[in-house]
View 1 (cartoon, helix red, strand yellow):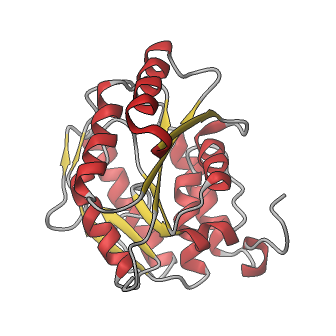
View 2 (cartoon, rainbow, N blue to C red; view 1 turned 30 degrees about the horizontal axis):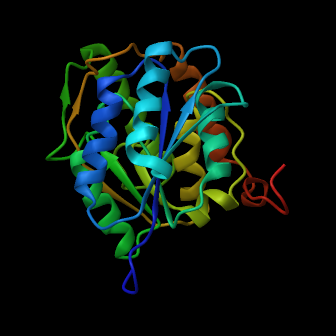
Length: 247
């Protein structure tokens, strides 16, 4: 983007994060000097802890209108992010975690990729410069096989289709009809843009296990992810798009 700098919305679902949420906001802010950043922190009426809410209140006081928070109305992680999509107004939108599993150090590279014309800047743990620290060995093998299968099925060179650390042009996510409300939404929201012909580039990023909070992922989710992957692959493109106002 030559004329002016794109404004960026960063979506951060939060349940039990405290110091890692503060560090995420701080590192994103210092890593993108001169940019206009808007942090949307999505909380859960059921799962977000009082300590996390207190941390968010402090962030809102420190960063002013750059940080806003609200309780999700749709169910699940996917529902929380879709609620945030509805409130997104910037040129770019970033999906990342609040627990530092999505390393803010590569965020400037992701934004630079969009500035240069990419529609989506995705991250990968599987290429040189990436890697896994503290990842369950069995899950790693299953993850590799899963990625390989869907790379072939979607005719894509992307190597990490499930890691939900991505930056999008906001206009893209506003056009697409998302259906999943649980974790497989994180798969759906890359597969549908790929099917619709949007250009995605990958940036290697090292992954390390979270040091705060607990994961809500479950082993059985691989079945749901597979269901979504197969469904989207054979779905009509017209059914992926909004035809009018968001419903």
